[in-house]
Image (cartoon, rainbow, N blue to C red; front, side, top):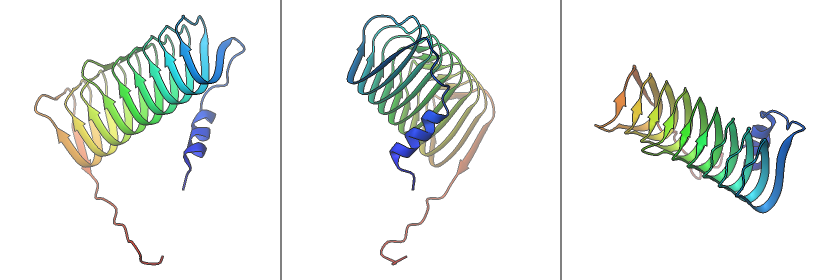
Length: 196
């Protein structure tokens, strides 16, 4: 079984190495209240970004709250991740609870226990989501692929939608511009006390 720390380490290995010009912060609580004119790398217990970042952001923290705009890619790993600002390129996020209230200008890859793409949020590019529970109320400007235990779609997706889940609900107000492919997977059977 993969431990959360090992998964985080594997996730961070997939990220590009930090360039020589980047703002780097490490600490229990990190609050960014003034703009950062370059890439930003941070590891901490609690991370709050209230200002803009002119480059990419690579973040790992127990709690990540992004209110400002990030001009480049965002790669984030944490227990709770909230993105209310804008992402100027791609979003890669892995965490226990992930909430998108802002916008992503390009593609998104999101892995989480609970993932919420909230009403009023937008992902312009292709989107991949793996989640225990997904609530998709926002907009996706291209294809959406989902693998989840439960998936609720109430937003607007301009492209094709492919969902594999144990429970799938497409609300009456949902708009899907392309093909809809649903795959219902059966729950795995657990054997308790069998002595295996």
